[in-house]
Amino acid sequence: MYNIGLVINLEKDPFLEYSKKLKDYILSLGRKVIVLEKFKEALGLSESAPNLDEICRKSDFVTVLGGDGTILTVARRASVYKTPILGINLGTLGYLADVEKNDAFKAVEKVLNNNFSIEKRMMLEVFKDGKPFDNNFGLALNEVCLRNSTFSRMIKFEMKINDEFIDSYRADGVIVSTATGSTAYNLSAGGPILKPDTELISITQLCPHTLYARPYVVSGNDVIKLKVKDSEKNVVLVLDGIETVNAEESSEIIIKRSKFFTHIIKTTGLGFYDILRRKMVEIRK
Image (cartoon, rainbow, N blue to C red; front, side, top):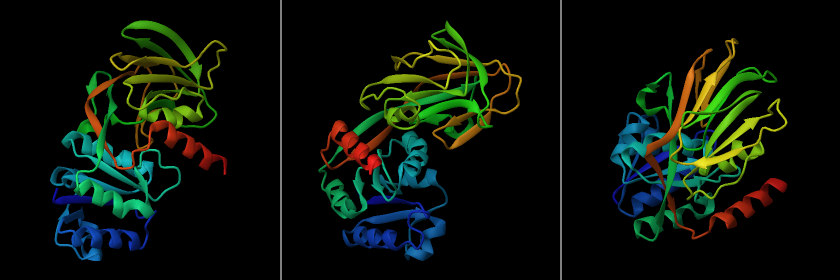
């Protein structure tokens, strides 16, 4: 492994102080660092890429400095090239990040010494009215959410699983989540926690106007279809909290397992339940 991509979140490292330290450390190990062109001069590097796609394509693995939001952005690109991601948490909770920033140097060294494992995380792929999204933006590692863009306004939709009609709903929305995303928006909405190595899909309604509506857990091979039954113009589809597209009345949203996976680098040996317990303790503080 000679080419290491470095993806930087300026909100978490506004003066590039931490990025410079990590860059210097990687160079001292005789490896190359690849960053976006806008950071090339500030970091004094000779190697750069015009966009995130090129970083993922040219790198043996990508080190992400930020929080889960940054990792989610990178995951949708890195998955296409099967490029592993090492997450360094500079944010708050950081479920997807492997280590906190104080342990970043040690984590990088472990990867370079082949002292690590890789977790393959199932992703979702979304089609709107039978058409795929452009440039693989139809990929989601955490969740796909159908909701009203105006808060406190319900939407109407019907749901099918494998073309079998389930029900029609009036709710604030619905979250279709992977096991990885079960501890994100899905958890906040009262959905179930799923172990990330299980290839399952959780479907959780947001504040449904139906007493019997409860979350579903279905196979990763199932196909979920959501049909908008609302004449309002402000129904939107949100992927991983990043990509937002309009979902007009009668739009049919198809959500299914993607052929792509996110490859998460693990260097700590901590199990899922250890991480979950620690993060829950942080929330209570």
